[in-house]
Image (cartoon, rainbow, N blue to C red; front, side, top):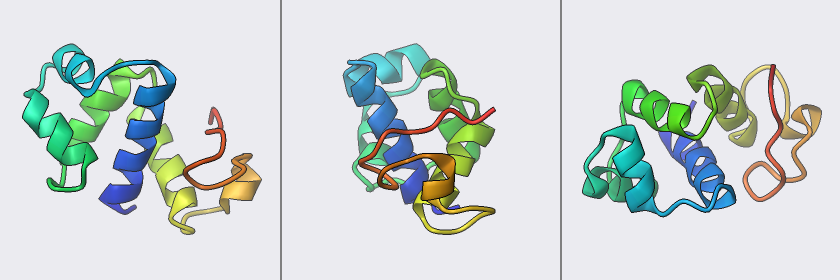
Length: 96
């Protein structure tokens, strides 16, 4: 998984839920600068940080990884098989 693909998934979910980056950071217990830098591609997050933010957005870490892998064209299937219209810009699938 590329960390950039994972942060793209997080950013999309944040926007869909109508949260600011500052609200997301506060809910995840993180510094707002950390979240801003992570989502802008200036900071490479740990899996723990991605998981922490994903939980706030109602997505388990494993699901974010599956979506990110599909978006990056790797993993067990393509984004079309997961139901996304486009790896990042399309609707994100719910993976069970």
